[in-house]
Length: 61
View (tube, helix red, strand yellow):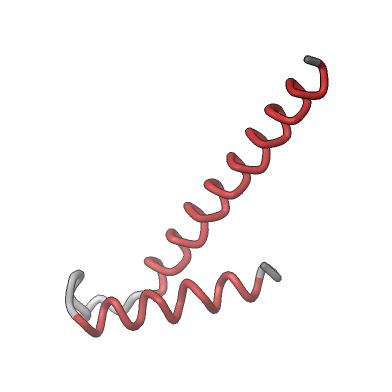
């Protein structure tokens, strides 16, 4: 019982941390997007993925 509670608490912590990181990376990537690029366009998708990955690498993840 105790080990199950500890496992669930750790799983919750890891998931929460992962989601927080994803939200932060999303904000950083969107903040770098040029105003001229329309959301939903092919160019927007390519740049978003590039910026997201660059920001992820900066954080060492």
